[in-house]
Image 1 (cartoon, helix red, strand yellow):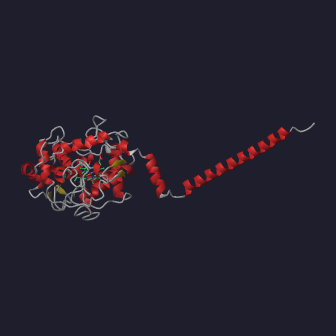
Image 2 (cartoon, rainbow, N blue to C red):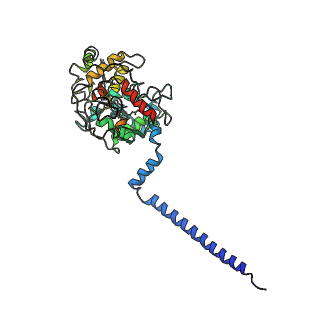
Image 3 (cartoon, protein in one colour):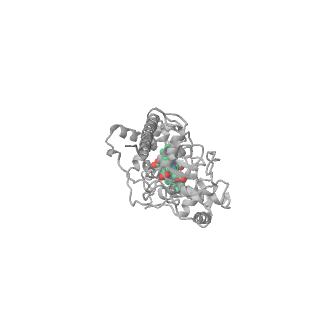
Length: 362
Ligand code: HEC
Ligand code: HEC
């Protein structure tokens, strides 16, 4: 019997295939071992973390809320109670966070017990009322659900830590906290807890600030001064410096301008934020369903207060894309052709219309 030459070829082929298979298995095992080694024994490098954050965070376009007043998706929101937190250590941390938000200046203000003069005289709660839980009182309901998010002001994706430091450097005219510090960790734990009953990606009604209707004239600081004298000065004082009871560690009535108030890079320095805050929250006790000021008075008093002296912030890096500036950001350069004066005092209707028209083109 003679050998079939084909069967010999087949056998060779089978042998080669077998070897190839062995090689593949070996290589896969090797790569697997290498990957596990990297995962277990080495610190992730900065670029890897950055890459991973980019891959896993939602796209900026999807994150941008449509307008100053984002469309609410949840009708009635009430903050959860800290009593619901059963882990005693977590609860203690959140209570510390709440305390820091309610009485910030006791810890970091002019007479701060952790560090004196690190911040101005304000508490977070002066602007985020009831420790960030009041309906249209600039509450934190949509922070845990929306962050990290893209913000045109910095031109990047911001974490909650970065957002809190924004307010510290601007509204509190102070020094940013290390994100690992006990104080920052506690505040963020509390803020995340406040929004923990809001589904990811959603913005409940009553979140943030509600903006009053635009005037069809510029807001008028001279009229605003009359509103101030009539409605604000009894608490915030004629000189706008507020009222402090010595030894109290914090202001009873916080300063509205001057060296101990928010700087010109702060959210309230934008007229629509100030007017919206004041219309639905001031004089202290006003609410969104029982406002005390008219739209006109809210805009005019905003113009008066925001034309008084206050600390300056270096905002050269803000809004790297000038076309993304909000209609009431008062510092140029502007991409829309309107003057700095109109960006500060209005009328805002025409600016907003132009911005919306540009957006619609995209
Ligand atoms: C002088 C007023 C003021 C003070 C004080 C202040 N903030 Fe704010 N904060 C604002 C305003 C106004 C906004 C909204 C700004 C905007 O939308 O442009 C804001 C926004 C925020 C947001 C984002 C909210 C959201 O829904 O996107 C967080 C978080 C925040 N502040 C935390 C803090 C913390 C924590 C402190 C204290 C360390 C603080 N703020 C102090 C005025 C203030
Ligand atoms: C009855 C006293 C009272 C009156 C009147 C009053 N406020 Fe206030 N205002 C307060 C108190 C108290 C806070 C801090 C609230 C808190 O921490 O819960 C505050 C906070 C503020 C803040 C945020 C903190 C800051 O210092 O920037 C602004 C802005 C403000 N008031 C503006 C006004 C304006 C404008 C008026 C007049 C239309 C006015 N307030 C009238 C008591 C008052």
